[in-house]
Amino acid sequence: MAIKKTTKKAAKKVAAKKTPAKKAAKKVAAKKAVKKVAAKKAPAKKAPAKKATPAKSAKSTKSAKKAGKTSIIANVDVGFGNSLSIRGEGASGLSWDEGTLLENVSPYEWAYNTTTAKGEVTFKFLINDEVWAEGDNLTVSAGGTSVSSPSFSW
Image 1 (cartoon, rainbow, N blue to C red):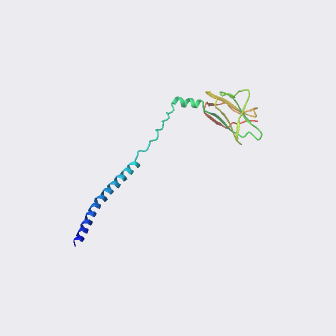
Image 2 (cartoon, rainbow, N blue to C red):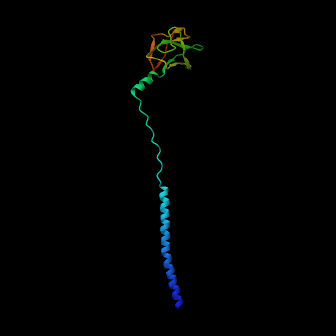
């Protein structure tokens, strides 16, 4: 019987020794897990801040309008095979002596565009640079758009 008691005591002692070792192993594992989690939470690099673009001043808006496109549009049917031209002053290329052809945008729409207008552009339409439109001369401000429907008496 003595042998049995010793075996039980030895088994108890071994079991008692194993229990603290298991707790220590759990603590080490927990510390390792904490270290891994902490490494994952490293702060991310911040993107550089975007520079703000300055707002346009009133002066730059006005100067852009002066340097902008001036458009003259005529809505008229000049007949098949005919062209529409413009004569006037206030933009380079315009003259009262010789006409400048307008671009035929659609069957009844003709356009003249310029970026060289200074102040007001005064003009008048002609068919084939020969037949003048009826009425007074027309004007448009530099950077503006004029849309008209000229009439002609042939």
